Image (cartoon, rainbow, N blue to C red):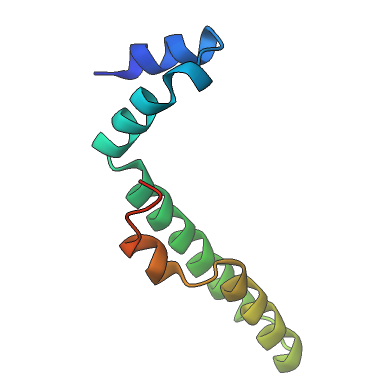
Length: 83
């Protein structure tokens, strides 16, 4: 329901002046949880794609890279400070 409100903030260049309201709307629709879920799904697909890599050492390096890019994703889900 707040879609039009968000669009007006963006189109009107009023993001900074309405940051608190924007955060309130995004928190209300649990945007943070959705984005964390989406990142985990992307990582899952990337790791699945690597399974066909014949070079075990290269595969392990890439798996570590994909996992390391996310840091500790479990902490993101528990952190209230960024909400």
